View 1 (tube, helix red, strand yellow):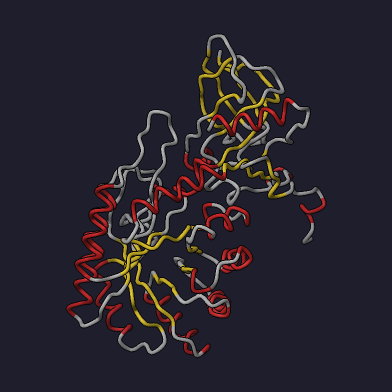
View 2: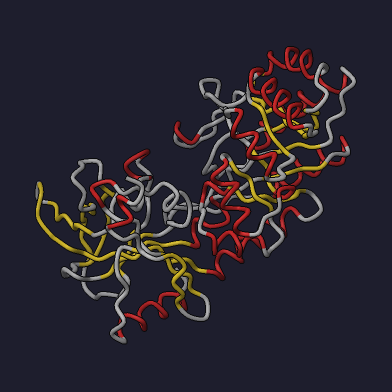
Length: 403
């Protein structure tokens, strides 16, 4: 975490203005820095869209939109949120593995123009709804390139076992039906191979499959004007991990753009916000298990389900510095679930009430949060010049508001 940001939180706490924990804390400057890195790498090469599933906080979305970034969504709910954040319909990509007709109606009424499809049935449904609405839409066929990058299986969306995308051998069937369409015009190829990828090679391998698809349609007299090459750019979660080297990816995407005279779209999510967000938590209990200290904190799988879902690592450090030796400690949440574990960390001996920071909590935490065990969704703060509350803590009454 940046020293200035830590200092702001410390001063707030030391002044007697305790921050209720657990809570999410976002670093505005860090998010802007991440956006600048992507813009620098892909200037004149690709148009950037933020994968909204990574973080749906309105303040964060407005911050990203103000930097000229579009939105990539997967549901009417995300369309609604993006419109509230100020995105226009033509700034939104609507990608989803499967939709119902009413979801397409909502998107069209909201001004969305770009859709992907991941099966023949879904392509036909897009044509039918567009025809009924009397609107022409631009569609992308999402291919499954059959690539398994070095990431968790749950984060791999381009492998042959994945439910996502259309197999390459099915493109002839896509061609057959797309020629009959009058309202859904095929304009692009979509490929997204997964998330949290820290090596450039999988992106380059996937781009070769995209080129195969472009050539297939070119031979059959359908010009591809766009390629959406997805996201998946990883960020270091562990201290020993290195940043992704963008150079080979940039070179590859530039060559594709120039060779086929097309527009490249990218839809990163995690890279924008992961390391710009933290969970502030406190130690609420201590015990011993099998000669190992257990630090029980007030944040758990309700605030960050990623460790429980796929054994994700999130670095944890005390907010304040402590002298003395460090020891191996099991860090757990307080929920009535054995899966409510963060892992084993080297931490100093702490007292009940001490603050800790869970790093890289800006992506896929608050959007995956739940009220399991009757735990209200926590408040969120944005830190820039000061500490600004950007979402209130859910009240107990709101837990049953719709019942």
